[in-house]
Image (cartoon, rainbow, N blue to C red):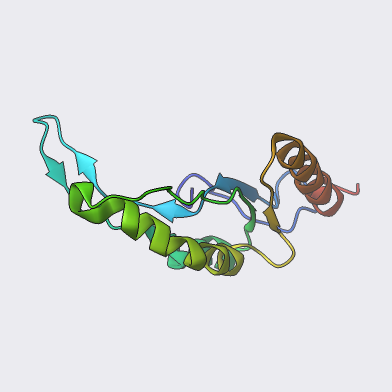
Amino acid sequence: MNSLITSVGNGSSAASPLPYVFMITDGSQDNQYMSSDWTWHGSNSATTLDTSLCSTLKSRGITLAILYIPYQLIQNPTTFSNSEDIYANANIPNIPGSLQSCASPNFYYTASTPAEIDSVLQSMFKKAVTTAHITN
């Protein structure tokens, strides 16, 4: 996202935009991928978001709003695929703190049900609109 946002201002005019990034996530990151030859690469050990990426956005004046939809515990985890389920479950307690530190102040939200997600998204957008509007 950082490279896509080319202009950051104070929101006082169209020439000075005040950008917002909305992230909706379960907060878990797994860097494993399969290449075109069906070979697995990277680690399958679940981790949290790299918060330095968030710091880069926020240091430019970009507001980062995060909606955390809690990662659900994997029932009956197995040791299949180098214990991927076990790593994912062990990562769950680390997720909220990581996402909270990633979000701009007062822009961290949590929701679990469809109704909560809808309500929180509306709150996020309303908050952004009240702080980002052009006054002239």
